Length: 174
Image (cartoon, rainbow, N blue to C red; front, side):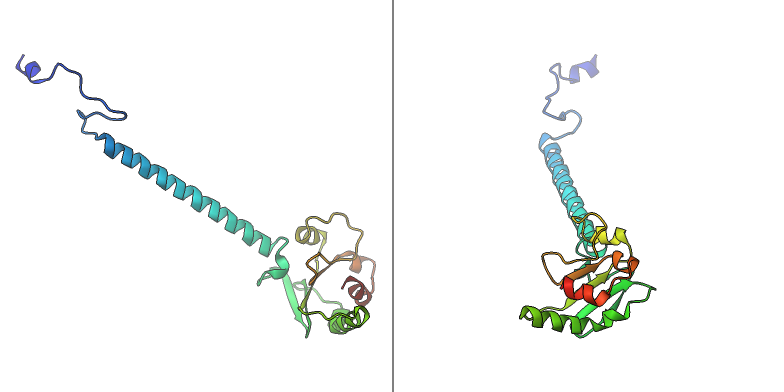
């Protein structure tokens, strides 16, 4: 009975989460809950930032921002005076691409405008590459495409399929 007498007959003080009887301090529990929420927010922020970085990396290496990527996997570069021509690695490039500088000069004279930036010409290996680089363009009936931003020409596999005059196509695309 002595053991019972030392215990209080009143119920232990209870808070929102813990009890004093078990050594839990409500303020400490709430602080740890806030700490957990802060860590969770940071984790979500890191997850979102990582996802955004993966998306940007994909866009540069394999997607629509490919022409501006410093690394172009699967493509080799033919560097000319006023243009860079990218073609499938291990493949051969049409000799007409070596005369792109002349085609740019002809185009500038015709339009009476000067090109201020280097041209980038990407000779797509296949239709999958073309549609990946220009996702808004569908179909396979064109020989080349120049997006609105203007310093990139995507040459489609159609040019090689129908043995199209590459030089004439480049002059018309520019």
